[in-house]
Length: 476
Ligand code: ADP
Ligand code: MG
Ligand code: ZN
Image 1 (cartoon, rainbow, N blue to C red):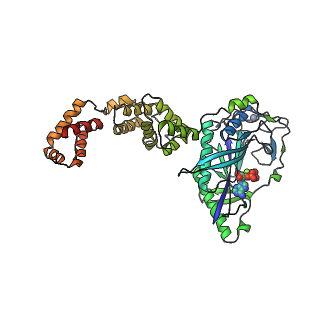
Image 2: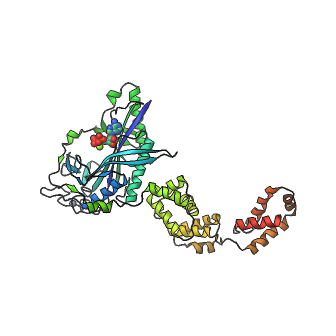
Image 3: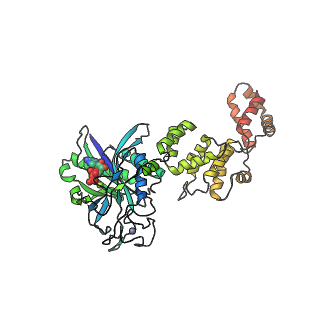
């Protein structure tokens, strides 16, 4: 009887070399407060200068989501005091953001699709970090002034599932465009979830709650679920008006509940006004031209894989959802003679089954070239698919093992030599005269028995296709 309404705000840290308004590096893991200068420390008199690389990345994202990229946008001051923001205001875009009116399509498992509208995306400067250490708090300003793109949807999502699909798609696009690392744990893809409920059929938007600081897809899903639960219960108990206020809440991962953090500010509290120290952000025609040439995106790649390789929707979706996976696959196919089918099975089934701990496809001892070569050895019938699993097992444990060497070492070369297979077949036939009689008398199921015996005798190295053919011939 209730409908969930969700709008998402995502802060993406852009992977520019230098900060938004100064030339300090954006790189991580430096000693505290060393990547700073008068501008990002907000010392009086220091002036910001816009980093053009940020506009380039904005053009790329805007193009990817089919948005209007404003040739001219400008910056505003958003006033608030917080220890990690020495200027006591944030430079952001409020009145005229760089990106407006984009869309992103999400795909449900059953094949349904839905469009989520992205209202706008704006450029802003990140704050520093407060580090709480016992009963003292320290401030590290290395991150202060790092460029963010805040991407804000319309309240178009109707379930936690839709929110997660949207976030995964956006995440994937950021990685494809390579405009940010989008690492949730490290805070370079930060999600604020706005949640409200309403009686089904009601078009009005009810009071929303903003839940912050959730750093995994799993917890975002959970946070939405518990927040919807809380609001629905308040409604049913007749205390919705009293209990549900427009506010910012924190998700507690351990207790699995949301908790009030602070009342939600209204825009007026921020006293936005145009930033007087910066010129307008202008995107030249040339820049627009150059940076709107973006790489193939996940949806397009998925459709191409289906068409070009006859891949099914599911596998194409899995492989293209993640840029590393897609590149891995494309590298495997560069090996001559590799079929998409063999490569797909090795990449989506066999390799993942062998990745554990912090070994993933980016640092797997069996890289795309090796796995591609292994696929080639299956396709050219040097080894069987079954033997390939043993080769893979071995290579996962031995970093510098090569495919052909491993095949030799493990003695897994498939016997396709018909002479050798023929004599093995004959031996099995000679050893089982009654079974032959039964088979010839009509008990056709016994064929499998003969194949099994030959395969066993060859220790699995006989090419099963050849075994089948020869046995058929001999037994008929
Ligand atoms: P603010 O800038 O104060 O955070 P916005 O109006 O820009 O507020 O909205 C922020 C986000 O909240 C947007 O993603 C928007 O879609 C979403 N939102 C607005 N109203 C609701 C609502 N009633 N329920 C759920 N989400 C909402
Ligand atoms: Mg907000
Ligand atoms: Zn600086």
